[in-house]
Length: 100
Image (cartoon, rainbow, N blue to C red; front, side, top):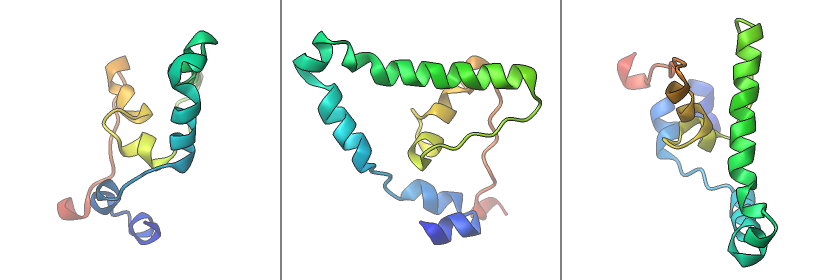
């Protein structure tokens, strides 16, 4: 993963699993009847909506914005970066090694 990142090898990064142990724990805690009873099952959706709102706010004020995200959120078809085109933003992925 580190070598692929250093080389900018997007194809290799996409092919690697991005299992996040924190994600497994979160899903265990936020799933089920207890979480639903106390609204905890909505936390992930609320956090995603807040992140996108912050991106929009930042980009409305600045030409360039910077954010850090787990690779899963960057590369996944249902990640946070993938949600931006639906809001009208253009997201350009780095060129893959095959295209260079």
